[in-house]
Amino acid sequence: MGRVMGSVIKGVGLEERDLRFGRVALEMAAAELDGLLVYSPAWRRENFRYLSGAPLRSSAGMVFLPAAGAATAFVISLEDEAAVRNAGFIEDVRQLRLLDIGPLGARIRESGRRLTLGVAGLEFMPHRVRRHLVEALPEAKLVPASSLLDRLRRVKSDWEIAQLRQAGRICDAAWKAFVAACQPGAREFEIVARVEATLRMLGGEDNFMLIASGGTEVRGMTPPSDRRLAIGDMVRTELTPQWNGYWTQICRTAVLGKPNDRQRRSFELFDEAVAAGLAVLRPGVTAHEVAKAENDVFRKHGYGDYCSAEYTRVRGHCLGLHFDEVPILEGVETVLERNAVVIVHPNTFTPLAGYHVLGDPVVVTEHGAEKLIATPREFDQVPIDG
Picture 1 (cartoon, rainbow, N blue to C red):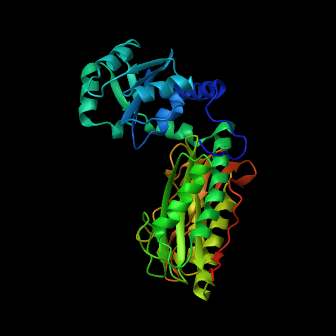
Picture 2: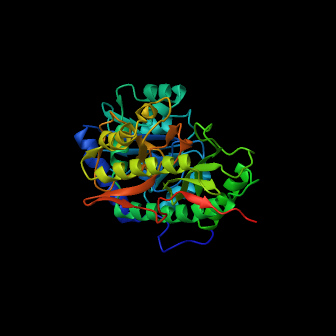
Picture 3: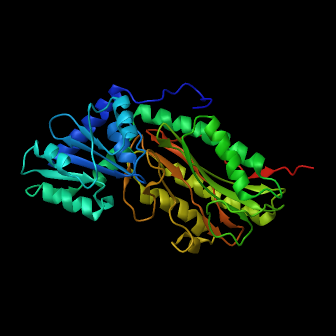
């Protein structure tokens, strides 16, 4: 696993399991669900991990939780079966071929033939799998339930916040490695490789990372290319390491050498926007209010046109078992409760210095926003070797 920072415990305890299952049971009762089925494909594994406590390595996995009784996990590989059993959340673990829905249907029917079954991940379920499920449960009513688990996962337990803090510590170390790797002539993929090596040595499981280098022509970030850095370049990144299933993100921009006046003004604009978004964060605030606070800074300085979808996607988002949860946009009235974890980042293009990236991950507390990283919001000036 590599050298681990701090003393955060890997693995999830039974107290955490009972907390999660208890919260799910209350939500199921409120929604009048007789059962909850989670379908997780390989690219959206967060709900499977939330209910099973285990990572998902194969192409898909499912968990069935009846309104009364124990959960059952359905997996399609021996590796996933071992992981679920080792986690200890679910004792009943069964092998399943995705097109052989018979065993799953039989297990669900044990809860009754005429039941309302919430399905989280229904939007990801292949048509053939869904058709077989409907055929196996002809008297059941299937209803979408992804929003139910999205809502539950948005509010983190103390244990979950500890994992996110540990991922934040890896963010800090990885950003230092990023800055150290930014030298004239270095290629973007070489910088990302340095970062990947650093976070893996610290126990990071994965990393979602985008990068962009250059000047005012840069309109967004991409996976790393073979472009070589030059003096005067701004180098932007979203750096998102995963620890024990949980992702924390840092957004920063560095400049090679001394920044020019327009680059400094760009940093000041984005720093003010981040501060404005963080200042309004507290329990009960909506995503709309956070995004509006950020965008109002751009409008005040005459850059309101660059708050549109033509130039930016979101003004931040929640973090957790997925690295991009519940986007923060103007008009999105999602309420951010205590212990929600959010990154506030007004990343966008302006004509000042091109695309600029800046943002801090925070947990929402009764006193406001509490940072999950130690890295200050500064316009990092990379000293040029030689």
